[in-house]
Length: 66
Image (tube, rainbow, N blue to C red):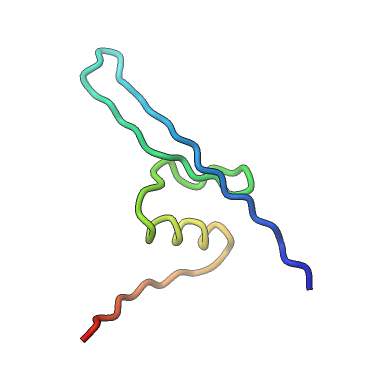
């Protein structure tokens, strides 16, 4: 069985407004060349974004270690 190849690209970016009073920086995530999100911080957010792009419905839950 052949597996489909998926290319993930992380691209750093930054922005400074015209008067220099604000600055933003993060990482853009691309899947197969398509921009998925400009803010690629946080594992949960990244996984959800990629899976939804691939057509999956994502439900996240947390389990306590008790």
